[in-house]
Length: 218
Image 1 (cartoon, rainbow, N blue to C red):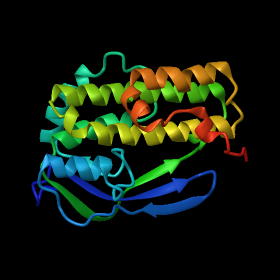
Image 2 (cartoon, rainbow, N blue to C red; image 1 turned 180 degrees about the vertical axis):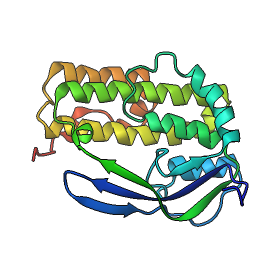
Image 3 (tube, helix red, strand yellow; image 1 turned 135 degrees about the horizontal axis):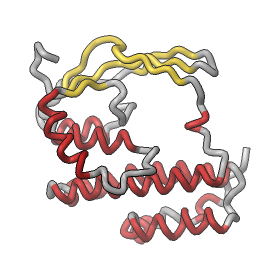
């Protein structure tokens, strides 16, 4: 990173799951170095090549951190409760200030997961908590883009990305048998589409429950 004077470097990540006794390497698909913040944002946030939209396998330069922390400090207000997609917030701000992104060879980050409870969505309260966290994180990123006069440029990409996460959570609603729960239906049908994705809802009709009626609970 010092040799290349890069703003950020990315590498492979070694992942160890203590419960399943798995030890795998997540490879970062990286075809070239990137030399503008537009390229960095597209690769890090919207590219299928970046498997980890997080800060796990990345090193950030001090000059990027110094600039990004000013924005992140302003985002602290009403940030309590964001426990899903919080890495997205950090990575997007870091990417905005990154003008040179390079790859380092081999896994430099070793992630050990001692429990998979944080990734299990089998309780109604947890699904609603994760939805509220997604809403707050999306609000933060959208407000950041608006402050930087970039929202129109990235609007479709950012909303499409969070549509996918929303649909993932909604599939868990059906898988766990919560589709007729009034609290769940209110949270996933009305609050979400009215606050964030009204435009996308009207355009693509993404959030109707009948789209998922044929899903079978496993």
